[in-house]
Length: 177
Image 1 (cartoon, helix red, strand yellow):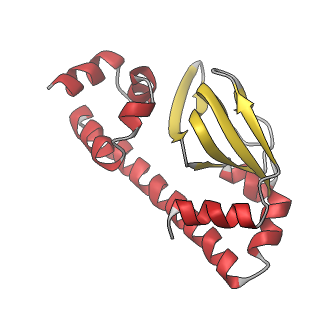
Image 2 (image 1 turned 30 degrees about the horizontal axis):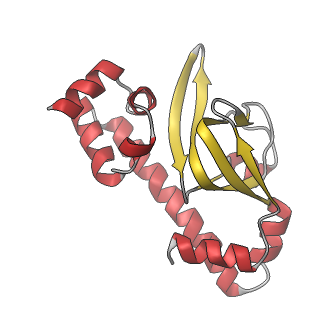
């Protein structure tokens, strides 16, 4: 099922409770907080990261037509270490867990949508783990470029470099070669 169809079903089901605009560098969620919302990005871009001492480790990006959620907090209703921050001015539609769970439990077709969303998130995580296991910066760059070419149009190089675990200079060299 395409993202467009899923979003259409969310619209039809009146799941979007509100729309919020997050300014550049503003947080949608801070580490240590509980967040059980699902966010659909209408425009802009977000980064999802954790902190490792003084260093930020970007684990995922979200941009137009992506769904973003602090999945650990969504499932457990406990605080999560994840931060969700706007890279540029971003508009998101918000769905509460309560409303979403009522929706997915209302019929088997809606439950199927949730399973597809989860499947997509798990597959993305598996690909991310593979990226981190690849030793060569070139291979990491090429894997992500092949999988998500839009990323390189939407996200600044300094954030992509962090995501790829390399310096911005290394990323710049790889992009030129």
